[in-house]
Amino acid sequence: MSLSKKQIANIKQLHQKKFRELSGLFIVEGEKSVSEVMKSNWEIASLYAVPEWVERHSMLLANFVHYTVSQEELERISCLRTPQEVIAVVRKIEAGSSDIDTTSPLLILDGIRDPGNMGTIIRTADWFGIAQILCSEDSVELTNPKVIQATMGSFLRVKVVHGNIVDFLNNLSPKQNVYGTFMEGKPIQEVVFNPTDIVIIGNEGKGISENVTPLISERITIPHPANRETESLNASIAAGIVLYELGK
Image 1 (cartoon, rainbow, N blue to C red):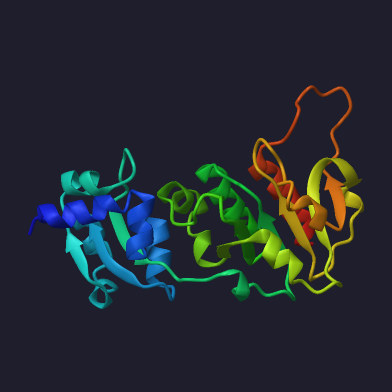
Image 2 (image 1 turned 90 degrees about the vertical axis):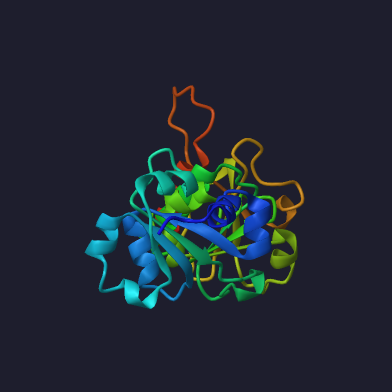
């Protein structure tokens, strides 16, 4: 049975942020990511797949509202130029800064706007065992399709919340260290991180916000080798180095 024009229109609306926010739904694409969502505690509102995928996963599909669609229909609802056999419409799990565990390491992202960077950072945090990220309110949202795609399923294991960084830091215990990444500061390899420490990564171009900077306990830096002309690291690469050290 073909999808109706209304079904197609409703799914395509989720390509846009305002409709994702209104509905609380977002799109997950690709066999790996969708298979992981199916095994998680995230709710799949509906699932759309080509016949070959449906046949391979017939035993699992009994628990989900699902539709067998043609390749052409999949292309019409996909966010990708080349769809990957299956698309799931998933309900967002609502969480805020009050859900952050202050006894565990925390990465804060201040103004990360690029979806690819955001998704890569989430995936890297998952690799190094950092299970929570607080994003500023002006950072790209988790449910952006490009973010979800770049996480390769890691969004299921890393708690990513958006909130006011200044308010969060002002309510912290005085015992917690808040490190910020800057061009100048203590070399990161010299820092001995504690389980409750927090590290802030700033915007791709502007760095850490002026209103956040006064709340940082210590500035740290990723040392720049001599005789190198590159001015700065990509935000996701910098975050990878930070996460490696934080997760030790």
